Image (cartoon, rainbow, N blue to C red; front, side, top):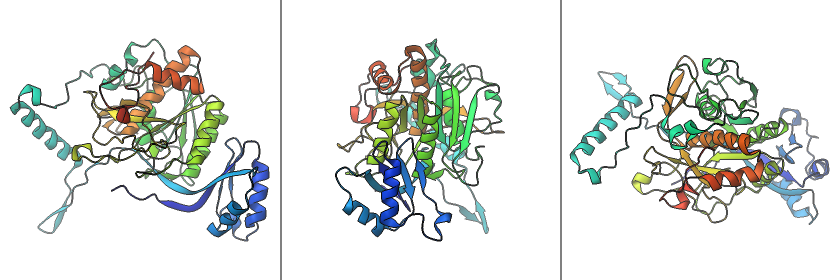
Length: 421
């Protein structure tokens, strides 16, 4: 069963384009916004470019705003603000075993190694046609994901393209990025951009990592793109809609052609997409910015459990990315397009056992998730943007047109595997 969404107690308010001031005046008159003595502790966040505000008011006050709204009202939609998370494949966290009064932790990596050894033994005992083992891939020079998406064959580098990765931040001291253009900003109060989690550094590495890293294999797609690292998730891997929206506004204001978001919140069958994220994504496309987001990791396909695309990737105007393994089969965790009213998977990328950068001193790490598939698509979008000159919806259409078709359900992979130019 999918977890229920977690709310912050604040609300997102969408205004008609060009009517932010009018909408804020309507809110103030109806709710007394900004008049309470404690309002200074929770002032409204107004995002003029997107036409959105985040406010801390009582639900009954907003109800009166909805009730009195006219057909030509400056306020188009109101919804609760949610908590969002980094979308990495959940690790199996083993229980602690007690022996002689001591707690013994079983390392996750040890258990993975044991699982892989068992799978190898089973595979060697089964007839070849029954074996479902992942094929061996030579990653001595480049990762399997860059090979499968033909990045290694591309003459494009992403030069001149600005890619914003909204995540847990970035290791600004990573040696593979010395000399690169990196613009950064934190939207997490009390936390610097410096990545204390690792998820953001890994995603930035896949999208924009070096062509010649300090240690092979090569793992990055758009190796000459300009990097915009927006910290919208804390070092614990969580954030809120307001931080995400602030990051989107920052990226658009800086002229980023591509925004990559490996984050989200789970949805359920029948969950409708957010009208606010949808309007934001449409306004971004009109300004030449394509938003790409992870479809989510709540499924357990090996157990016959399928969950719908996560929020905000379930917005029709956000490019939703599913995850594949190196056999080009669906990742066991990748969500499916189950909701007819939005919520489709649009395209797929490499998302299992993906090697990329990690904060020092670890430097590199291999992890899985639709989070890892998403920056593959974002980096390749930068390559297409450089070569074609296309932006926004036209860039989206080009990614769809050039994808590699697969013998898998469109509910899982959309048009297929993303391909570099």
